[in-house]
Amino acid sequence: MAEARRRNCDTESVLLDTYQVSKADIGRALSQHYGCPFVAYDERAAVDAGLLRGLNVDYLRMNYWMPLRRAGDHLEVLIDNPRDAAKIEHIRGLLPGASLRWMVALRQDIARFLQRASSQQGGFGGIEDILGELHDSTPLPQDDEPAGGLREDDSVIVRLGNQIILDAHVQGASDIHIEPYAARHDTVVRLRIDGHCREYQRIPPSYRRALVSRLKIMARLDIAERRKPQDGKIQFRLPTGRDIELRVATMPVASGDEDVVLRILTASEPLPLSALHMTPHNLERFETAIRKPYGLVLAVGPTGSGKTTTLHAALGAINEPSRKIWTAEDPVEITQYGLRQVQVQPRIGFTFAAAMRSFLRADPDIIMVGEMRDAETAHIGIEASLTGHLVFSTLHTNSASETVTRLLDIGLDPFNFADALVAVLAQRLVRTLCPACKEAYQPDEAAWAALRQAYGEGAFADLDLPGSADATLYRAKGCEVCQGLGYKGRVGGARTVGGE
Image 1: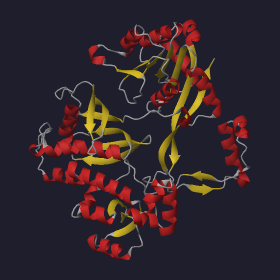
Image 2: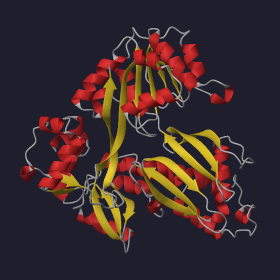
Image 3: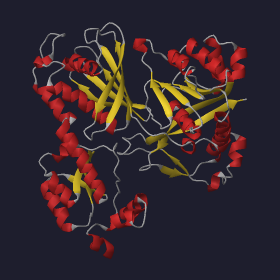
Image 4: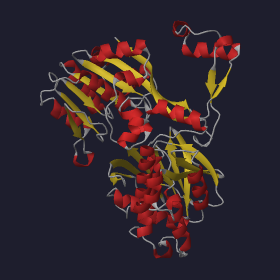
């Protein structure tokens, strides 16, 4: 504390910077001391920028507090000291009539939350404000005409499209679904968060085509073509200055309108193999496979199961100056120094197959192709693996064993790929319990036996766990943090690694 006074800063900053105490440990101490939840800064945490309306942001920054979001009947307020009586009284005066729930945070984190909220407020405005402006407009009766004179290039429609993307990113969504239901029903906007679709907003039906057209313009698609599906991409800049990419797919539906699905592709750094949560047995087999001099290594699973993340982790483990590594991806989501990464462009004929043919003339040691979508790409991959190259790719199959059936279905010679195939990794992303509300319970013998059988008798015995009488398990409960689902976040895990 004396050092903090000398440096004219708070005690927590000294603990963090000078003594390397972790933020999580400081948070637990603050939460226990003040008797309220601790909130660390998270760029994906929900922040209601509209709550700053009427408040001086500079004043909030100097006094280290801010209204964060509404949770049911309560207004959650971040503050550095929930026991500062004078500050508490002043906050109640500025937020009259609100039922306040205090949440302690570090001063530097409060400043970062304020920066993000003020950027959102200055950028697009809250979704409720934008919808309020739409409701104030008078829709025209004609189905094909823009409501209230609003077109896809009108400022309120532009802001609506931007805010939907921004909110989806902040909430950690992987996909945005725009679903029009003809002229007499609201357009539903749903977000897929942690693999689960949730309704986010309803848009008045008169604006459905203006919104869809706006998203198609952002993706550089033909807004006059409504009869066939289209694919495109959006480069979107967040108020913080960070760029994200969205893959856009439109689909004509029976009502004569178009659904739009936007997949958020956030560029990130590669994970180490140890962060993939494989069992030691599977990790050992996978590491052995990726260090082979040649052959074919496949990661398989449904869409959005983390296959590309796994392959980049594998490439990161073997990325050495002595190896030339080429990758063909659509799009390039994860970048690594030392890899020569190529973005395929199917519209101009630069497909995965074309990229792989070019790679074979560019002296590769290792090739990674984003997906084996067709027989031509698979054939070239097999040929490359049989001629002294290590090839990584993905397939959409449900298990490691089904991969063989899939390769046969697309017409590969079983004798060729039997020699080439080194390993198949089948994986899933599993939802994790919400840390704020997970509920401890004592399993009975039947539940313990079912868990043992599902995990595998031999592997379960190796865990050396106590019996059901001494074990404590956790289950989903549901709270405001996880929106009543009981789950928040996902973790990757390999189900099967099959190989030689």
